[in-house]
Image (tube, rainbow, N blue to C red; front, side, top):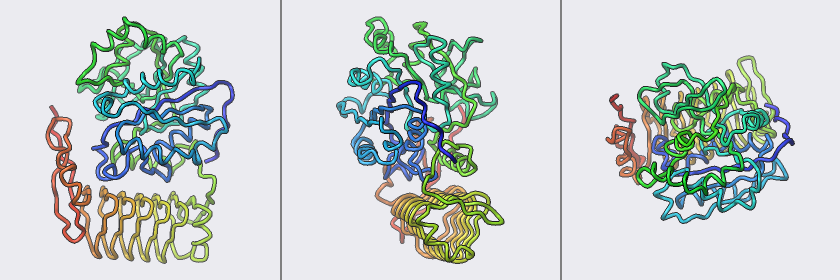
Length: 450
């Protein structure tokens, strides 16, 4: 996982609109904004920025809407931290538009506000627009060069799917000609006409500032406003295409992930563990190899577990963060152990993420699950496949959490049960009250196809 060289050929500013409630990712997003949830020990947005800053992008503008979203993002990135230190040119900015107004607005509204507010800082540079929950290995040199070669106002990175892939209808799809000029953009349709999806990674020529000030374009764009919102995929990109602006596609060859659901989180975690995202760095880790697998272990944790290294087994590929402790007779397979995690004796972990400050008692078996921050799993418990346990839960000894159960504190019962699915009905259904834990288990409701 060696870091890529820092590109020096050009300078690009980044805008990141951050909004939404993350309802599909309950229960973790009940406490933490989605872009800050750790995936393979990087916050999701941190993993994205790690890549783009290493690629040579510099100034980053966070357009975060809502109190929790804005304050949590500022607290995490406000001091710069390890991401700002990747380059001495990196600076972070936090947009302060009116929250009451923008709570009803969309990602394109945020983007336009940021372009106007930070026009002086951006100068005549190209602007990279990314989402807070996407990671990729997009080479900025190639992306930028393709963008410049076509004279595009906007170049949109797209990813090819199989035309029969059921996930297609959950994405915006992009149609383009043999010169890669985009001719059609459909936002989340039941019958996609293209197999190329919008990755929400796009780069704009500096002329976008003038386009957004054009009265003709603004009238055309405002006519598309839906429910008070202008979103990049729903309204902004289609408006550019309808006005025959030079919008071009750039086809991604490497991995890309939209980390917004349990399944995508788990799939992307496995891809990172198996080094499909070699652009992500773990500079303070040592590689520990055994007969059955390899683990990337933070050096502090390695010093703590080295005396007992023969008391547990790593299978396939694993990742252990700093200041974690592991007991005896433990088997860890394709799993991530976060910062300050404690794992007891006789534990089996398979394709599981233990988020920071979680504690796992003795003789626990966890398979293909996510365990939230500051959550305690009592000894002898069994956590079945697909379980998704929220933050600050205390499960007593010998608890069983069933297949695909999600667990949240009782405080969030109304919030979870009022979440809406794509058909307008409830997104989740109650499974069981966990009285001793002051929590409840719920499942995602199956939505019937229209």
